[in-house]
Amino acid sequence: MFEYPSIGLSGRDLHGQVLLVTGAARGIGAEAARTFARLGASVLLADRTASGEEVAQQIREQGGSAHFVQAELGTESGVADLVAEGERRFGAIDGVLNSAARLKMDTVIDGAIDDWDQTYHANLRAPVLLAKRTLPGMLARGRGVFMSLISLEGMPFMGGYCAQKMGLRSMMLSLGKELNAAQGVSVFSVVPGSVETPLAHEIAQEMARRFGIPVADVLASLARNPGYEGLVPVAHLGAALAWFMAHAPQFHGQVVDGYLPLSQAGLIDVGPQSSASSLKASPDHPIPNPELELAELLKINRSLENRIDERTRELRQLSEALQAESARLRETNERLEQLSYEDSLTGLANRRYFDQTLAREFLRLGRHKSQCSLIMVDIDHFKAFNDSAGHVAGDDCLRRIGAVLRSVCMRASDLAARYGGEEFAVILPETDVEEARLLAERIREGIVRLAIDHPNQLGAQFVTVSIGVATALVAELVDAVALVSLADEQLYRAKAAGRNRVMAATQT
Image (cartoon, rainbow, N blue to C red):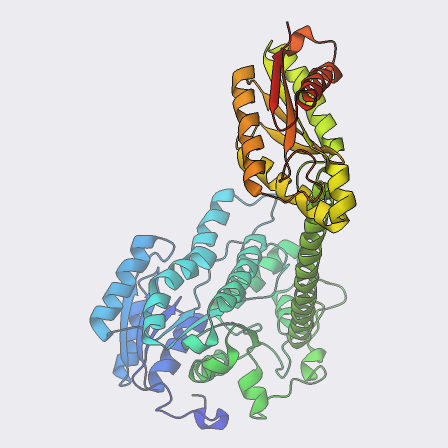
């Protein structure tokens, strides 16, 4: 039996905890369950084979607390029944070790897709279902551990297993980032290396058969574990997993090296290749195997993850800066567009936008055989006003008259514009002459109510306007200029008749 005090563990480190171990019928799962029980935990063992009961019985005979449930962990009902049975037997589950592994060896091309589906259920779907079933309770209680075992990738004849274990690794990293360490629940994965288990020997025998080489050569290749001259003793890994369970908070969100507890205690040396380097496959029988030691792979992985995180932060900051700059450009463009059609003094449409709108409405109304009215407004004796009151007062007068036009022209289709100098114009699509004349009267009266003193007093105490209104069926006009000319004629009639009045006419 492993000496637990040698890595700082005592028989009380897991006391009172309820720990669920999957794949507990043999190998790593069975040894982890025994170790957890020796250190005081109540262990819920789960496996698809009934032999898990023998492991539970052994634990009980040694004075430990254990209960076995035979379950299909790849099904929602199987996981639900397992967790419910464990909670009924022991109470709330404090920790989970996903140790179950199912492997069917074949090439990616020749392997049956049903084998991929079956192994996927055990290797990846089961941990996801267990996370959904156990983590909410742990989070509610503010404590717990969810730990998974993963493996190296890219082994021959193990495509399904390796792909699913890498999927589990990625899922655990995602889960670790989704949960805040301050919530009290630790989520992480452990890479155990090549461990002395029945599964390791089954893999070696199958590879030897497929490559046509001695089993010993395959085992020698698999046994390249830093600090060991061969496969890792399963008791060592069981102790390491118990140590990780007891010290879980410091590993949240990580993929950790299974050799860490023993190397920290000085029990193994994971420096440059140990004497295990003498255990090499025969040069006559080369077989594919990982080219880097596990520690180096983990180091590279962590370095890449740090670089990715750093680059992600930089890209996020750049994206935020670009979004802010884009918003500023959009505001600037909107303002420039506004300035392109707005008269800066009155805030009405400018002459350029008036001409564009009238031409556009002329085409539209012509197609629909509709009528259009146009109001032309001219300030009476404005030159005399400017000469007497000054340009500042003149500008203020123009602004106030522009405000009257804005307040009177309420329809979205109407357009009030500064036509030029002291002249204004209003386009009234689909408006008959009587409606246009009434609107023109409201404009005239509104300007009179402004009571802007006219210092020259040429005919009136206050500033007034003369207004001409023209209405026509657009299809009967030669062009838009013709409607302007009609409105101008009425404007001159108003001035000739004494100013401060509206004259209207319809094209006949």
